[in-house]
Image 1 (cartoon, rainbow, N blue to C red):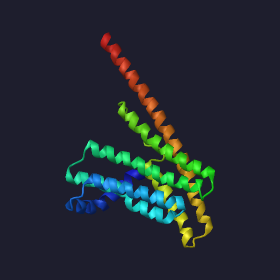
Image 2: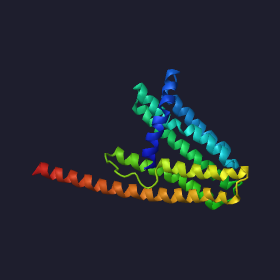
Image 3: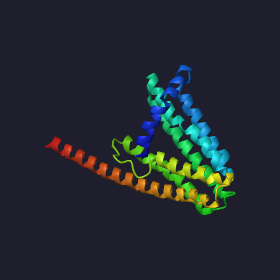
Length: 222
């Protein structure tokens, strides 16, 4: 839900910037690579040190490349399977860096093994949620369900909570620090629900497709 409406809004906002980059000879693939590098650097440099505010600011600045590169490709008329593959693959890399950075904080100075495990679960479940849809579609199933928490929701919930928690550095009350642990638990639970939704959907669609194929085979031999 969030992905649908937010993407449409920011696509309109970022269209002039995408056109500007094209006029300067920048390619969509270059934007994809630079954006991912920025997200990875922001997550793995700042988050493990507990600098959540500046880490979130850095990641947010670069995460919009995910919208800019596709916009550029459409404007230039160069949308391709390679571009879609590269974008999707590097999205997984960026997500892993974000939750990996949070896990490193809790494994180190954050000193909370439970939250380290939750962050790792968020990392792994996000990858698997994406895989279930891609794998289902690769075997010819529509996977007609988005689920409770998709990538956009995972990022917004986690980054907003991390950024707000980082405000403690500037004198914000200490209770604001509970937002990040709550967000991680919410993302973990939501990702698990989404994974179950997609697995159930693929199982149902696969059974229907197999039944339809069997009926067609019987009809052809009648």
